Length: 358
Ligand SMILES: [Zn+2]
Image (cartoon, rainbow, N blue to C red):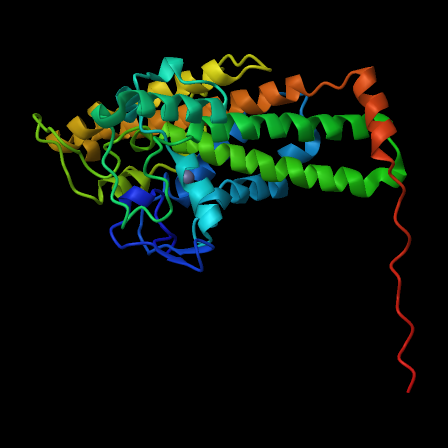
């Protein structure tokens, strides 16, 4: 747990944000709600890395690289602790998608546009069409200073976009490998660094979406009509993020032999695979609340559900890593263009300024 980092959603924040200097900076309060805690994100990443295809470069299988990737899987949550308005506004809604909220826009998971700004257009147009009859979530402007509450969330887009960036970095790396030019060694190292960073960031969003509470309006306890009497406690989210993993001692060691499913991903169109990932997670929202109510969340059925979510996150992530590698096979034209536009010349040796004259 890192409870000093700002909460995941503007709307979940109980203490008001404060905008300073005309929106340039936003102060976020301390609130313990991320997706999986650091341990869960690390676990998902390590499980996925165990299932990289054999063609992947050797450095990705070394233990120091694995550690760096798992650390980068925590980075998007760390961004939340920087109280800069622009970053909070951009970053926070990238960690979730509240599927139920789509209904007010006449949308379902299956018909949201696969492009982020197209999706935003869909939402805005639907809201305009409905006018005063719009039945979406009420917004409290005093609390919504990061101006994120009107959006259902963008996590599937964050996953797809980072998948695309990973294809790019893998491709550059593969081109550099083919060029096998020792003077380009620093370029190779720079690109390996990018691969390690993007694999981590991609892991974060895929992991978040595997946590059912990141796919629902009921993210911090049940909201609204509650005929089954589910918990409304705000801390339910942080309990699922971390507490329940501790209760069941769910660690990489305990799950490393679990069956990681080989998920099909269309290499240049991962959208439907990502949406199916959201659907599988969202399908566990009600069972999760039911297990909490029956007291079985701390027993075997709870262990099965939570470990299933973690392993499913790892399965999706491994599939995306492997698909990105496959999509990054450079053509002769790619190699030619890279050399044409890259214009790499090794920089001169470090310039040492002359000693000051006394
Ligand atoms: Zn997150």
